Length: 594
Image (cartoon, rainbow, N blue to C red; front, side):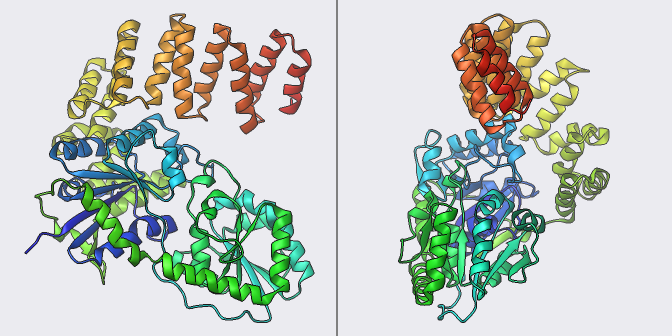
């Protein structure tokens, strides 16, 4: 019997109630698992079975994860000729504050690891060409797999006497909604037969619409994707406001196909994601701003037959072009084209649970893993004592499972730190364990710390954070030149490690090499543009170098995004005053509110 083609998809966490997870991981996995001869396994970086599943995979798909312990796994796969694909699902270099993993991508280790994994992969996949083009410098082989619909609704019928306009979604669209909220209120005043229905966060609803005493302004609590589709079944017209930010321009057109799949007229911002597939006047209507949105809604509400026509066309487009099962074979063929060799290891089916109706499996979640995940959620909500108790219990339930011990050590729990040495024997290829032990020993025993970092490099020699740590130890011993050479080596191994670039800039600055310092700080800031320390250090180096024009430009760029930053405003004002621009210096402080 021919061995099945084994696809393993790895994500940071398996949240089956979130739309992004369903569209990018669960739905494609289920569709591919319905193809004869294909087996798909979904797992997370927290699974105790992660390493064995990665070894078994004929093709390994990493979904926007920054897990350092994947680096040696991917490296080993490359040496064996086994293929890996990295999924870029969002523009993670331009995340808005509302995106809940923003802090991870502002962490130099996390960001550097993501860049390194993308470079090491045999290909990168994403939701749109615009998104993949943004990261073309990392991987020459890129493929677009658009979001699709798994279960469309029935064709729409003609609208009734009452028309419902609506929107549902995440906190990331709050500012987009604020821009069009006055239009919605005005439409409700002008058309007594119209209702507006909102599905999402209660505070967001109140922030956008303020007092909502109008009985035709309806609120529904956010829920699962299934709940959301039930919500769409009640709409006639769906709006999709979207500001043309760097993040939004790289998003998918999922709003368009969600509306179309339920026979809802898509009224879309004339912004990148929607322009590729939606057709003006055929499957959607577009608007540029609040005024043109008002015009579009007026047109629809005065022409009910147009609502029916557009809804029917949008539904037909989805049925003919955007069904998940229709695209699964193309995806599998692409994955098979990457596979020069197949893994000889068999999947551990006793550790997997099958999804009915497909050969899609999930790694079975043990009680220890469940408590670890629950603890992470509690910690993120400020319930730290409760989180630590759960991680301690997880360690007791599964002593060789290292994630709860790592989390305890990160949280400063001494018992968690003390367990790191024992866990290293059970996990000989874990970079995280060696790095955390080295960081714990850095002050009290620098020699043992250096040994831990060197062990990390023995596992994966291109791991820049370990080189950065060793450089820091050299610098503390007074060998700045030696530290600089080590940091150069780190950047040779991973040119996208912001911490290495920043540390190198610091050494150059201490040596009075302001031109080299500025060059290194520029690299660090380019990688993490919102890092305040990197920006201040660059401004300082530019000022000392005499490059005042560039220093002014860096300050102004920052204040455009953060107008209330007093420290940068005062620095800019001082530079302008030094340059004889007294009025401009005063204007900067006035603009900043000081």
